[in-house]
Image (tube, rainbow over all chains, first blue to last red; front, side):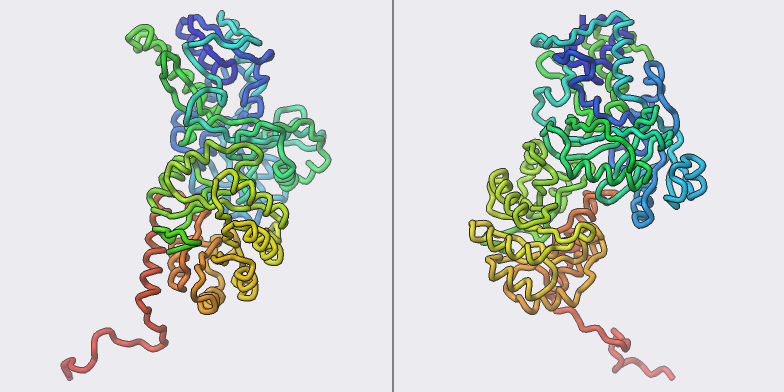
Length: 321
Length: 255
């Protein structure tokens, strides 16, 4: 039996991978409900390795590009691509983004309108990353928990993990000295008028934002990046910037309802990349930062392989490829 | 260079926002050998401790200059300065009182007032100001011993847009340390500022958002050094006519 602390994204993904390798698991989480205390609750749910490369290391692509197929076996994945635009006066931001990334094609105003008619006449140029996708984070976490349970994994909610678990996936609560919190603030909008079908990124030198459709007129708007471990509600400044940017993207959002606002803490290591750490008999998977859904599958596979290796001596025989 | 009785080993200051990761920021600080790193308290640590980021910064051994970035009023700036003194344990404060949300131009009236309040309270104030000489005089009268004129609007990367203004400032305040804050986009901009006789240069966006931040940090350090040396080497005057660099007398008359 492998014991796991934390039934968030990392813990459940590891449970899934361990079960796939034939190891029984028990996952503990203090929260009463799946995802209630998880940072991924506030995530965008973008599977966007090529866009993320703009500010992240190459690993987001090498580790992240498998995430789409992994998640598609568990939860609906919307392969609609990512559309990146910038206001006319911030065209330099678009050029910079293009220089830092790959896997896109350039769009003119007419092509932007073809993809997303809601943006007609608003942007002269854009970048389209057609291989990217998005999912609904809260649904994905519930579906992942269901998949774990269906394979015989046990998830004990409302229960603190016993001391000395095999695998610690407790995010920012983990006792790792070089882990820090990067606060993210977000809002959820509902609009009966706006029709946007894919992830949009609006570049801006001060407040770049993204908008991810959740279906049925619901849109997730994110997210700030603040070096802080404060987990209180979003500040007025953050919401002003996010909501102002949504309005710049499509003025029709002026009439949208703000149905939720929230803030979460992304756990991050100094290089902003996730890492496996072996300490005192416990394997720690942490530091998923802003790439939880993107990098959790690859990191969970690595964690499961590591545990197989520790248990059986020869990891190769147990790999599920 | 001595600022407020503190001797600094380098004339490059780095801002710490917008880096791809704290690891790259640490590397940039080390590679550039910068003496001072500015940190925004309000923007980076809103209500929380921000201790993780701060610890990573302090690991480098760089001297920290907290700032009041994002403050739009005297009261906000003064409150932020007090929080910064508490958090960072330093009397240094880079004072920003923003007057215009779009250009981030300093509100020089609020700046002078906040500088007076903070200086009286024992702070050592580094005011982010324009190249205006009268404002500079008021800031000195308010207790500042350093001035930080802009090169261009924050984050614009336009370089030194008014070299005459900085030249006049140098001439007007011969003994006052002048640190160009904001607008530096390329190493050549930093060199221009130093050639004008500025004492130091503060750079953030140009390094943090470069494709290779660590290399750019090093380039900025070299440009600052080159500009400084050039300034002290008594550069030649510009002229319209060509002057052959090989002396004419003594050349063989071949025809």
